[in-house]
Length: 397
Image (cartoon, rainbow, N blue to C red; front, side, top):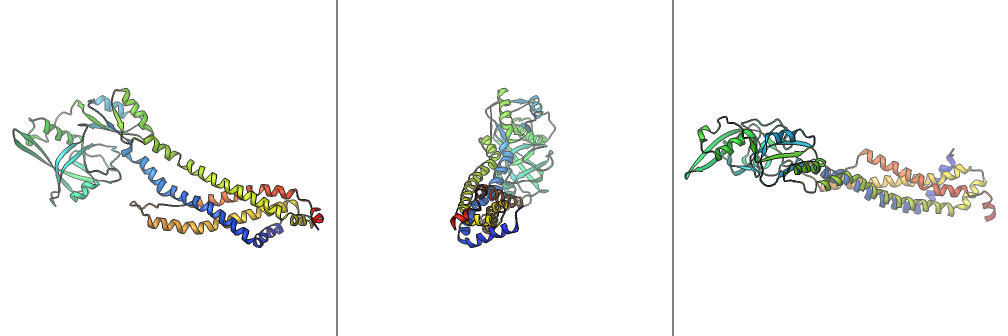
């Protein structure tokens, strides 16, 4: 059992050798502070940014390339796959467009607005499914038209017949606004039925402005699709399945595999950097403690001579190493925590997320790792004390 005397002797030795102790603490702070700041950045902006990129639904989108046509059986089969998060028909490979959208109240007008079909489960829309007569607006479009959920928006669709312009005006109820994080461009999201009305009016001269909204049979085939993988890791298998069907497609996130691999290995990367730093500090600490024992060899022999047990003698370097590490960790936190506050104050994110953050579990883990490092680094010095005999002090007397 470690005696109280061994603890007092170890601490008094540090007080006596205060200059060497300060140098050691400064070395620990120099190693630990950058690691904690890097960990805080990993937890904050780096981890959050990578997670957002991975979870961003637009990165899971698969875009059809080239000309093709798809029947209902294709959509049913694809929807049944576990790696498909969302699929629905689209009327053309490149987005259809409304000639203009207008706010009926403020008269604000936006021309050539892309029209995107949507349905239940659309990953870009956090809300109930769109029904005919209802729309969602992208954030940029909503701001330009000064519209919000519950407002009305008027869509103008024009075509030219024998030199004469024919125009359809249709009003929709705005269900909500899609955040810029999900869709940064300007677009109107509407039901497939409403989009088919637009396309059929432009393509079929038998449909007049008066019969524009009359019920019609859905087409047998569609020119394209909107397709999202269930998650980023499913992109590869889904692209392979489309290729087997002879469908040319590409992932919108070309570096999806690299991004996913970076997220999965972010902790491993930090752990590797921390391991190298801790290993270097451990070696320096072990050598320093071993050197201390060698310098104080006569003193240790005297302590053995006056009756201090080998266990208590071996505890002295352990007490010193743990005390130095605890003080070093405390000083590091006193420097790092205000620094993190300053970083977060200067580099504010739009979403209000912390750029750098440390949790309580990080601080506890840091202290625990420091104590473990201190205890193991003292093993060499402990072994050296066990080889010191009480008669050595007599030989040096």
